[in-house]
Length: 286
Image (tube, one colour):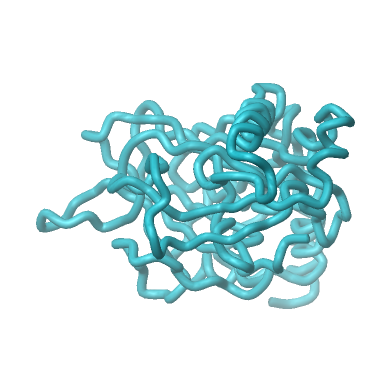
């Protein structure tokens, strides 16, 4: 790529908000091509500012998506023994499509509660990138919630009470992989992280608990923990903090797991849905 092409690439980018809650759409860039440093810096700053980025009309294979994702950090492997692993070691497909009677992807059907990816390990994913390949006519939308705003609007007395406390996050689902079980089984992945975490780049505080994976607040009695978490879950999911994305084929979304939650709406299981997912390894929350 010559210098004039790189300069034009950076100048052609347009960034606009997708909702009052969070999110920016980036246009004027073809992610199948290598990006110049100036272009990438604009995209990265837009990500820090917007928390999620939407790119529409992209045509990407596994290698091209991984190359772009890797600009943000070290790619994470696929943690769990899901079906749907791609040819690239960091690629996982999210799909309900069956071939020869076997699912070709993970997390196939149904609603999925709000969560932050891999919050049940010591170094959760800092970023997740999802690329839409086949989309149902209705539903299967992804909802994103702004955890900076959730933290900022908490009552001051609750902030003081929970400051410095940790919550236990677990990976313990029913067979669907989208709904928490009623009891934590022995041997499942789990890790305690701060209820409020600090973003290492922006230095802003974000609420870091979620309905799908957070089990209890460490050090509190069970009833008090349940009551506080119930309040925090409802607070985090308030409509004014949420953007609901209706997918189109060719959409690519990058989100920051350190300051957002995401969820999925239900859809007709008879309709095909296929997306390609890659995550970026993060740091230990603090």
